[in-house]
Length: 143
Image (cartoon, rainbow, N blue to C red; front, side, top):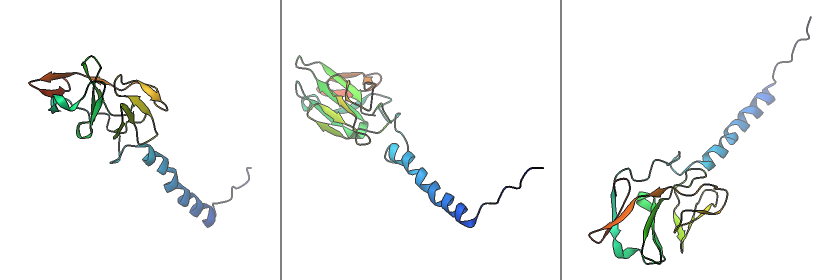
């Protein structure tokens, strides 16, 4: 015959209930603002971002509303990257010079190349098609 197991006390049940909501905070802290990742929030069709003159040679411009950064090399070549962080899917909302800084965990990316310059991200940003047409910058599939 096996020994009877003691039933949970009221204190044990209340402690468990108090810890459960706290455990979920880690998930909320790692998700993007708005309650979920936004990895699909980059353009799915060509998007007119603005005047071609807005991106100087050797510089970059962040288009937060489209989750895109556009840079121009010293030779004048345009590059565009998704600004959805490859670490946790957070939208990057800060550009310091040509360095993109993710607000969630501090990953940093080079806006000229899309490469990671500071972890925790390990994968580069996703490159997007981009072109200059009639003095306007157009980025996204089909650009």
